[in-house]
Amino acid sequence: MKSRSLVLYITAGCCFAYFLSGCHEQPAPAPAPKKPENTFTVNGSVREIKINPETPDFPEHEGKAEFVSYCSMCHSLKYISMQPDFPRKTWEAEVTKMVAKYKAPIDSIVSSKIVDYLVAIKSKS
Image (cartoon, rainbow, N blue to C red):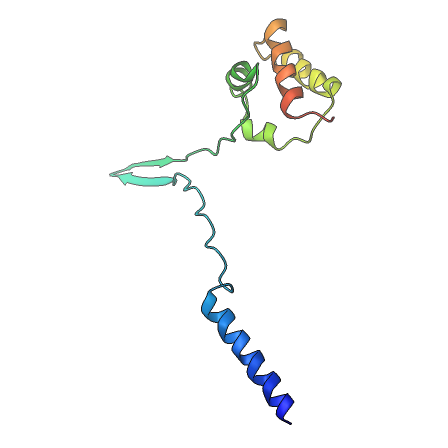
């Protein structure tokens, strides 16, 4: 019986020491970056809605400027960030389709820079 009490006291003491040491506390999570809020205002009969778009952050690489300026003219860059990683041939076909079918005003030099950028950031290895 004495050994059982001794084990109980030792266990209780260890638990108490653990509690006092603060080891059980989890570190506070880092605060999430604050997104700009959408606003809705009414001024007389005029209603205004300001929607702040979510713009993904793309990595720096040669061709990023062309990619951002030309591709965002027609669609959201978030659309591109949601695409799976494609091989070069698929990205070439996609950019060619945007020019041929949807009449994107992109010449062949810019188009190849955009393809190179997409391959660099979103390509299958």
